[in-house]
Image 1 (tube, rainbow, N blue to C red):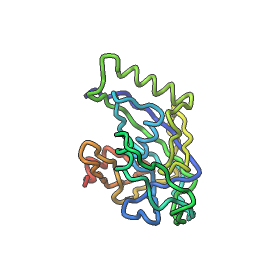
Image 2: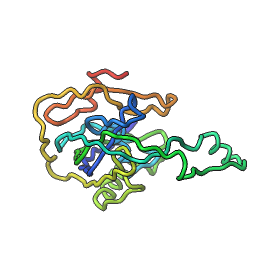
Image 3: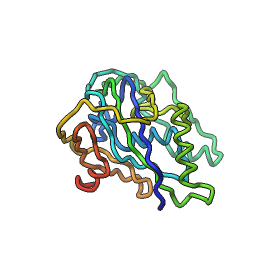
Image 4: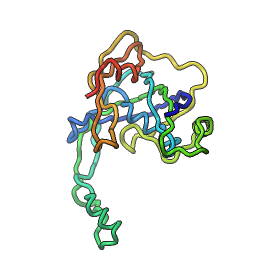
Length: 221
């Protein structure tokens, strides 16, 4: 598998919620962005079946601050079975009544977030002879510089949009020093293994989470 060149991205926003899976009813965010959320931001900017993004490091640039908010949510969702029936041409209802099943839930979210993301991509088995590393690297750089994206990237929830820019000089300095153990966090979902959740032990040193090092030495469950 060929490995592409690395990119460095600064992302920031007013709010973020990287929901802990053990606390779904009342949402509680992890302390920092998860690698899977960082990957989702890059995929929103540039993604093709020929490449797969890997997060190398996460720089926590702003102080970690939490805020309580209350939001109106839907208590249910359209069942997958109905969607599959619709794809097979069956006459099913595929909408939710906004006046029904609305619930108000509290969320513990992050406020005023800013991260530096270091990542690279790998070329997958879906690549053809036209999917060269240089081609996708230049496409990604061009799209980041222009602020282009396939859909608006977000910090965990779609109502928390991400602003982004390419870091072409030095990485901005983090406000943190020393070592901080952030505990076990969601690393990613293995879609090739029945959507299995993978966790890793996130340790922040000098404001930097070396994701690949944590995966190698922190253990994955």
